[in-house]
Image 1: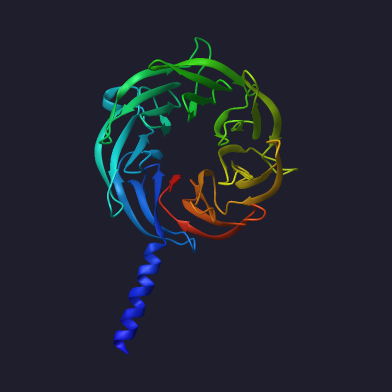
Image 2: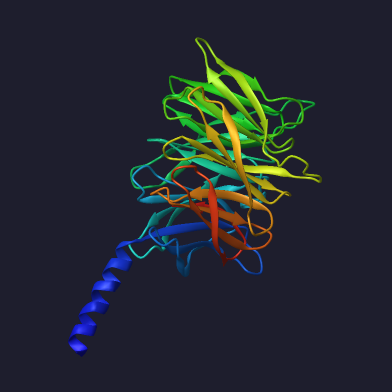
Length: 353
């Protein structure tokens, strides 16, 4: 009897472990947080478990994997790296047990970096207060090199707040929250040169954006006026085809958009609202335009980054002020969300599968 029980327990443990994947959480370090945390996430049940401090680092507010997922990169949102008015980015190797082994750190060439994006050979960092974009080569061993190009959006009478970037083949797009535009750069030789600026409207505050897989559509979420602008690719440039609110009809009070993501099948689009403290769900049609289908509470305060599990079954929201991660089940047929539970965590602001 004991042998049978032990065998069944081992089988159950193997099945449970095979369903677990690592979930890394970037934080603002404070009295509750010491850096980057790693959890086990069960992709069948949605359970978050086994918290551990993966790396001790200051204000790792945004995280990104290398393409082969062997290395992880974290910006540190500070302004005092080596006595300069700059933040920094750190490179880590990912170990089998989920801990992160430090490789090196370099300056982000601007104060308060808030985002990092990688392609095959480059890492690009957005410096929010600095208003610069810092482009770095990444070596095969994971080491990040000092910047080989720095792009400065600041003007004499206008302050830039670069907030996020995305690569699309040899092109680079940059959301500038301070100057209200999405910049489009094209790689010529070894540098990225400005090709176009897409204005989002005065005091709109473009923060994050999603690009469809075929590159035909860009969805920009605007922090300051709580809207999503849809851009469609034309013969020579992208054209605006829609401007839609992320807030519930009748909502009163201040609210600031945070993050935006497409579902894996690109049928649905999600956004987070800080203030209304909600997730908004849109259905996407064949023309690329979107229609609101749901607004649901984040069951927390001040939702920042959110992420969708690799199998598309769950959506997780990092609530900064209430210090919890809210887990939702995603309805496959409608894309709508059902709240499952909340997990208390140290000051979460970024979630990475």
